[in-house]
Image (cartoon, rainbow, N blue to C red; front, top):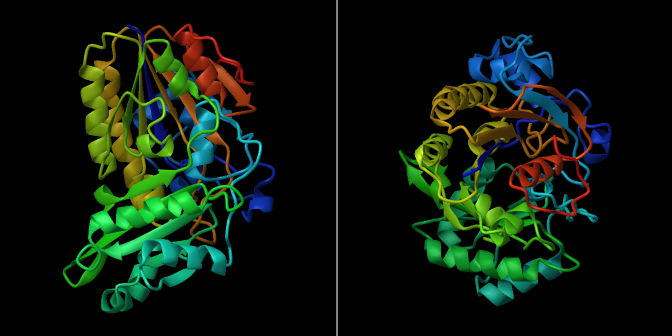
Length: 387
């Protein structure tokens, strides 16, 4: 049976979109190229053969004359640079209205309502911040008072950080569910995120495996729903299940690291699928651990780790398997700030029966959905064009 492995390297953009300044970004942002330049070059031989070096000037990754995959660039049509917007557009859903952001923190009526409904008595923070920095700054006060740390970023997120020895995980998750109910309609927040942390060797450390994202439900059917409706299966690896609020997801597994996600992906590819299947993976470390923290070497190492696994994944692919690699936005660790960057994204498509081609510059991420649904012979009404 036909299968598509859709691998999202979270935040691995490849150059500023023309409207980047409207989102607070400089035109020099280019996650792939700048990481390679500052890190002294990248060693990604598999993605090089697939054509990533044909899309930008990436140090250590020269253009490939005879690629093993099709390659191109996609522009985001939706007005946003957040995870939900990017993934939804990849799945065929282009947003007409952007999610709201709160650059000055959340207004009093939101915070008051949150305190009333959760019974948490008070909160700490309520300003845009780096997640690691804010728990360093407010962690002790949080443990002393028991008040949750609330913060946001340039993206549409309401983040709740609590120490697991101070607030039980179950309570933190319940508070996130309450916040999710509040932050709809006119408040229009994309995601509520649980950010649990612990103390290790006297320092606060976030617990990646216990992170939970609470997104708004997709307002319309996505590629995932259409695949399930047709009798196919969608296997979500990483935070995909959270991003789509389980809508259209047949089975799912959460991950604590890129390595874990790649291991699950490799295991899935080794399986013999009995129905048409989409294996949809998000590798978040590039964004969460390295992009937002301006860790160039960490980002480089993560890209190189992915490339090592790609060699094994490709080796295990069946004749009717297609591998698509792309991203949901940028998060250039070399430019000012710690937030996502409004970037176009690369797209690489490999399969034993795929004839390599230059896909050019696509006008929407939704072309991925159109391509996958065409391969599965599933009709759709997305405003997109298959590769």
